[in-house]
Amino acid sequence: MSYIGNEDLILFTSAARAGANNGDVFEHKGRGLLLIANITARSASDTLTISLQARDPVSGEYLTIWQAASAINSADLTVIYSFMPGQAADAANLYTDKVNMALPRQLRPVAVVSGSGTVTFSLAAVDLV
Image (tube, rainbow, N blue to C red):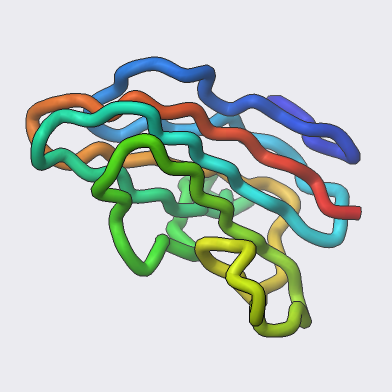
């Protein structure tokens, strides 16, 4: 298990990936979290969808608690998802999505590539204290 407590965590280094990719499981110890995806290349019609899963402590299963509203369908793009309870609207459009939610202690970011090709991307988590 990787821990993010007050530091950045590289979930995926930049590489071409296909299918479903589960990020490291980590215990969240801050107030909020940024997920930063940097997409540098993709096959013609393939897209990338980011989601967050929480671990059920009884069964050990992971359940999706959030999924990006739209798939990423371009390259040379960086997207930032902000998760924090009580955050105000993003009038300056600094984030791709601002999610007003509390986060569980154990999280697993998931990045799913659609289609039969690949998407080259990195994914990082930044703790917001």
